[in-house]
Image (cartoon, rainbow, N blue to C red):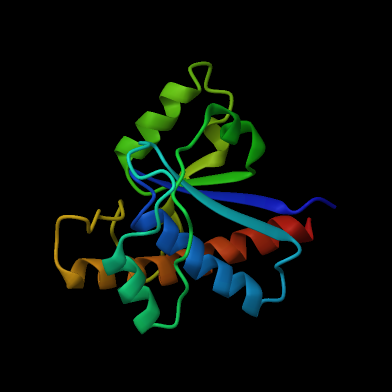
Length: 160
């Protein structure tokens, strides 16, 4: 059986989506599912393609034992067909992906990250880029919450 393919999407792929990627990778490793789940992240804009995650996000992640070493890339139209589940951080990310899929062939697999949160009530993951350290910590709180729910959803799908 091919691995389940999961893509996290934010604007620049240097804060929210690489944090989700790193948190999810650790959860998947701890669950012993690295060979069954492929995780990636991308940004709707290409400004930071080829760069590491924001140093503030890497620092916040390292303080909790996470490795946010992902190299930024821009999402491509073919990603929509390739991935089984695509999680966007906010409504603008969703609209940007819709522009890559004018026939709306992949709508069912594109979901908001916060749908999977059980301890937080946010509808969108706020972009911490222009804020202080607490914003990066809050994003990681959301990632830990939502990624746990996402893992349960994927495990359910893999069991079918």
